[in-house]
Image (tube, rainbow, N blue to C red; front, side):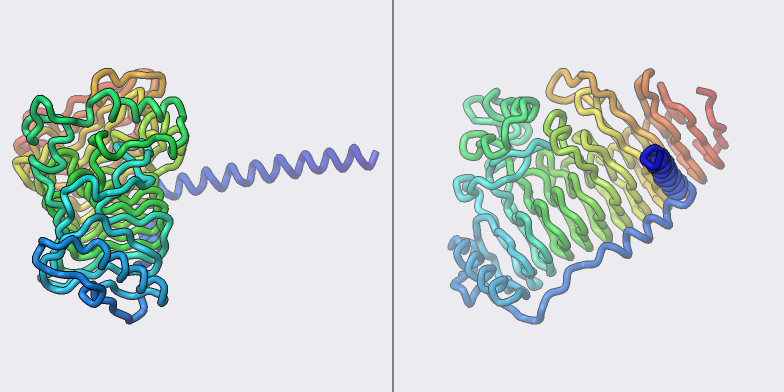
Length: 478
């Protein structure tokens, strides 16, 4: 009898605990939607920029020569080794031009560029050894990023100097296979079946990452700055130009601050900042002038994204300026792991070469979910296509259909002013079987736009105090 009673009360307790956790989760979800900017403040309080002890290690003291001719890879390596071995500090790059191969950061090291310093990165792909990295959302062993940190803590790149990848139509860019970037018949490119296509297939087949060997002859371009599985990372004030590929790439990292950085790079896939599988990321006071998306939040691609199964979450973008680019703040298309809690505020977006302000993109091969995107206090001068685009049928590299229908819900734009809105205020297309849910425009004014919206399979589109071409627009019946 006692055993029966014990089992009964144990069962009741388990149910009570389950109900309690369910109610707590539901309450937390409700709190986020009812007061999202409270969560934003909590995230900001969590992300603290790394601090370094007051010791300087000049690369010149380790044999570095300025002038942009001598390769200073060994000097950078020795300075970083000495710095981390002695408890950390600043590895200082003084005024001058310093040529180097890839720079690998270590714990408690701040790579600091003084005003007038410029690091020129080698354009010889053979200078970049194989490391664990990623290409377009699929992990692999490939050329090292130009600045790379793997599984490190308390790291930074700071200062008023310039990071110059020296990429152009003769170096790195033509690897994309496009003639406009210097490719011609007879040159290698990423689209060879043994290169990018093989990598994507390896992700689908769950080939171990260590066996996905690329590098020389594979034409998969490296990222510029990549923090891979790092904690407490900072990049501040530097100017980054002429990147081979994605510019700033926090990958599987936690507590990352990108502050006051200027990105000017108009090459292929030159996204300005791409947090991927990362949590608690703040991007603030930056200027993006790019050949692709200014900011693109990622979470892995297709089969490899389902293997990793990590969200990018708690991403804050504030007080930034977006110029040229395919989109101001973008989520996807590599978003298989999911994206959650994105906050964008106090930004300016304006260029005849900026296609959209806010963009979410995926397809049924990618899948994934984007939820809780909150945008407020944005001034948009000019965009070419639309203010908000949600495209669940994004198609690149041929057929991208599959059995993983993507989901988007809870997207709010508030206090947004647009002088020249392009073709559409809202351009959104979801799936009939899984519509886009809960899109809200509140206190939004859009002028010089051809059509207020073009929407398909969108559930609960609310337009509150929204004016388009001088007329108040009511919520459509969908």
